[in-house]
Image (cartoon, rainbow, N blue to C red):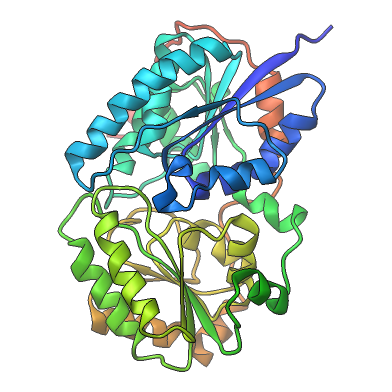
Length: 391
């Protein structure tokens, strides 16, 4: 008889929860599992939309809420939030006593949860490891979570190879594709009229979806780069703009007043919103002329809609991208040029040949199989690659 596993899933941001949605539904309905939700970070912050309410609205019970975010916009504040996370997660994971913890990605909240689980000898299934984003400290965090984890579901073969290069045994690493793409095959998207009603914002022109996060490594000052983006958008007055808030990385709060002022000065053209939620976000993407900014979604999910992405600056540097992703530096002229190409006939002709390298939208069932096949051994061996092959 199969032992029922208590599966705890961690989420700390709106984006990460949206990607995990169908996996959560599948765990919830599987008779071999008990789903437990550990919610923290931006979800519990009014400043970022209290997005835990959407989780509950979607029919999930939140077993543990751990508040960790300080009202700070500095690296010191982020580091202190991680410390608060370890303190809170130690108690919550002890209470939950899960058989496995699922973590997606590379956020500082996730690292705090992962290091706590490792000490408590709770096996971690890590999704989206092995990717490269050289412009953010998320890059190092992602690799650190890999080493703290036991099973790995990567989004590409290239990422799988990197996880193995980090010493993880190949039999514990599987390319399952990008789990957020499951929405393409399983979710119903809104019509433009329904989307407009839901947003209380009439979409009557071509529009852009814009999300810009601070670059936590490198020389891109958040305010300067974001102002360059706003200045570039001024050059497209015939396009409306859906402008979402940045995440809670240091520097993000300095951008929020800028985007709010930008929207307030053009209320019929620009909508500023803390969080769209996954269905509204993907519905917005589906009908957009382009997605602009530096979010990983612009590289991983957006190409599946045959919508161009203007990827700004170095935050996502090194991440595998489809042809529809147009990379540009963080200055007004370069951004304007990329937007112009994205909305041009030249792009539309090229768009017919776009292939998204992140899978086919069938990831959840593969992750379920991984969890069911888990045979945890706390003392995992380091897998050495053949060094002669890489000299």
